[in-house]
Picture (cartoon, rainbow, N blue to C red):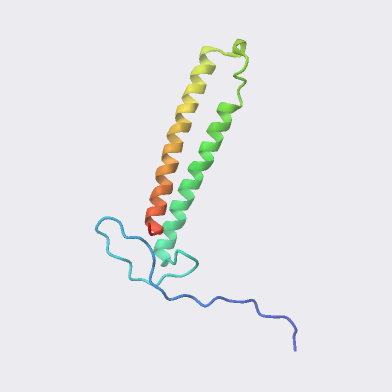
Length: 116
């Protein structure tokens, strides 16, 4: 007889899918599984896609922010019209990406978490 133990397996929860309907969409009647939110396979895929989207945008923001901060802005002798224009462009793209990230996170939250 082996002393090895079987890994603990969770019993699937057969609650309804907890996706939050949007617009005139009907509530999902499929079974939801997994940790909260409990989602059917279709909505779990949507959850993963929307999560990946806002996380990718977050990484884009970090890169743009680091690009702007990497320049030495304390020494005006190093500034050129081109470097200032490039920094302003990068800063604007960073702000646009921040706005996009906020929208994506809000969309994700509205779709999968009930506001109370």
